[in-house]
Length: 313
Image (cartoon, rainbow, N blue to C red; front, side, top):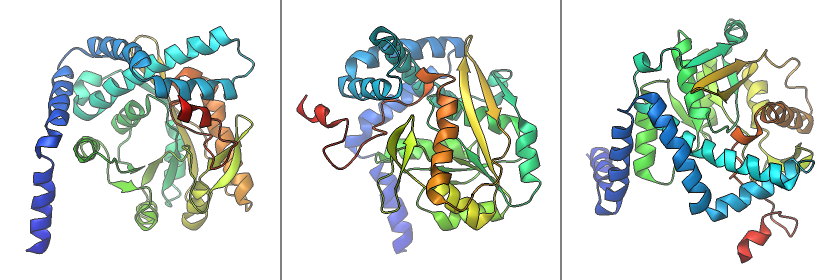
């Protein structure tokens, strides 16, 4: 009875008055998915231009990241990338709702998958597969297109959202398209899923300052990095298949499944973590504006933190 009451209390809390504005926003976004896809994407670009002006704090974080990672670019080119990136953020919002609520029939032909044989070859080993990806703005759409292309559901790893309404939508939206979603801290569940032969959608590229963090280069800059990819691969024996989604002109998406990493892990955790960062960096360089630059990727806990100036703004 206690457990049932706990579930009921949790569900009822989603409808508390403080969450009504969020439910209104969710309803508007759902209605928006009834529009033709190209109209939705056009709205996303407009939203991104608005976010550029409405989110000055995030704009400054992205500007710092672009300066650090692309010092060879002229300031005007960095600004161009910054503006393009924010358009991508607006598209990301729209693409996420498309991924959750638009049926497969309307998305037919929207994406092209390259290298599916690399995933199938890795799955044939029977140890599951770590689908190594990164936080590109088209991430959610990439997962949806891949789900349409494969014959078996793949699982995923996610960080729980602090807003319960958004988490509810994330869980419901992804559950329709994918298999089980694990919390990033649920290592036991992740290993169990791999042992069951599943592909696991996994993005370890955001700043990680936990006790096992490793400072590994990303664009030549030390970045607090999560070594879990090598640890999980070692324990499970699962091959690591890099998987990235690029947004192309005309509202189309190109998914690239690269060959499984050879001789990985290699036994040196720092070298393995640096290798993962390099794989991601190489893909970011193909479409710099599409990476998630509004995240403080290079944050540190001392005076060398490049974002300290933001505290005084």
